[in-house]
Image (cartoon, rainbow, N blue to C red; front, side):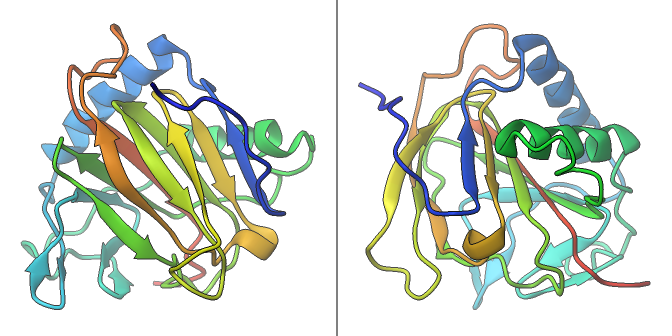
Length: 215
């Protein structure tokens, strides 16, 4: 049984269940298909010579361990698509919803988005999002199968951490004192994608970031 309880999260971390409607989810899944057919195909990044089980397509800036570039130098050299205006607006609205502060999104302009696809075997080890020079919040959206999301502390990959089930449509934000918290996805729950979300199987995760980079 999936755990939909609401654990107390550390300062700066926020979970908003079912924030996206099914209609919004379907629309975003259609955009995902356009991104993967774009100038840079979806690919599994290599970390220390080993391919990740998660596959990624990037917007705004292309991420590869452990740096960003405008061009996908490790794929085909093409420039990635820009972060669309609607995603910037969505990210700002997400911060307002997560924090209940009507001004929270005013200065948030994400210039990069990592769009990850998880199939049934994909996992994400505990890591920090620290390749950005900005410490603006990270906005994360989930569509498709539910995953077990492990959110930890800023000092170590080990405990203390909390496991949270992120379902289709869920919003998760981490910033402030939690911006550099270790986090990962140790498990996916196949067959839990809701009918009408646009995905029959697998999980799409969009993380919007402010890189603080120029160029």
